[in-house]
Every structure is written in C-alpha cells, then in structure tokens.
Image (tube, rainbow, N blue to C red):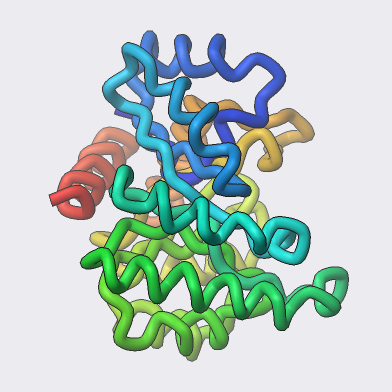
Length: 240
C-alpha cells in the first residue's frame, strides 16, 4: 500500500481521474483542504474509494481572506475525524497576516479539543515553536507536515507525540535528511503535498509517495518492503 498523508487532491487539474487512479493503485490519501468551503466538494472525491479521507482545513496562508469561514469549520467538524491543512506560517511573505493566522489556529484547536480530538495535518513553516506552544493541552494527534524546525523543536515535537509526514522534496536537502535521521521510526509517514510538491521538476501525484518510502528506506538502512510495512503499521496505529 502507498500512503500519501498530505495531498491537495481537489487542486489537481483532473481530481476525479486522480482519485480513480488512487483507487486502482490502492493509495491511501489524506486529502487536505485549504478552506472550509472546499470540504463539501472535495468530499465527493471519496466516492467509491474507501482509501481516501477528507480533512477540513483553513490554510494559514489564506487565513486572512477566509477567517469568516470558521463558523462553517465548526459546523462541519463533527462530520470528520480529520483536520488539515491548518497551522501557522512564519515566513516573511506572510508576516502581515500572522496575528489573524494565530487567531484562526487557536479557534480551530479549541474546537478540535472540545470535540474530543482529531487527526491533524499541520503546516509549521518557520513557526514550529509557536505551533507546539499552541498544541499544549490540546486533545488530538498532530502530524507535522514537511517539518523544517530546529533540533530542539524536533525533540519537543517528538515528546508531544507528533507524527511527521515526509515527502520526496523534503529529503532533497541535507537538513531534511538530518531531521529524518532523528525522527523515531514509529512516527514516520509519507506524503507528496501534491500538486504543490515537485520532484525532479515534475508535479508529484499521490502514488509518488512511494518515492519518499524508497528514499527513507535507503537513508535509514531498511529494505523498501520493510519500510512499506513500517509505514502501514504507523498508519494503522494512528487510526486506532
């Protein structure tokens, strides 16, 4: 089984065809959304595909434009076990919206906590410390998407019980490979971040999460089959 735990399935040029091929290839996909309004339409991609799960999200990079959708987020939340893409973006290009991002993230985490906890795919670009601060005392299971924080932040995230979704592009850098070497193997998941994620200048498709599986295996000294089994076991534990 191929596992893509962070994919914007609805944003491919032909999302229903991509979903159909995922079914054909047996790809498990966590289909994240960038706005609450996108959830209802994106949910339709699950049709006849038991391996697609649709998460409700509010991407930090659009929080300032879509914060009015938080009421819709709360309305939909009881209907799904999955939340994402949510989080904070501390990059300079989004500094003007940071206070609104934080307001939205805190609202979302409060709602998740009140609901008894969800599986959460979290954006933490240049904001790992702040994200981990906000996750304190919040019920639920965080998956940190494309983690790029410091060693001390990584250690803290591991102590918090976070999972980490890792794509091929993350592993192109020396820092990404170093982060991988420090993550407990029982917290590793694979992702593509498609269609935004690219590898060798090509847009990653959900089934290309197998590339991450193979690179991780090579870096950690596992066979590809052993790594695939480990990833499947991690998913099973996550969904229990």
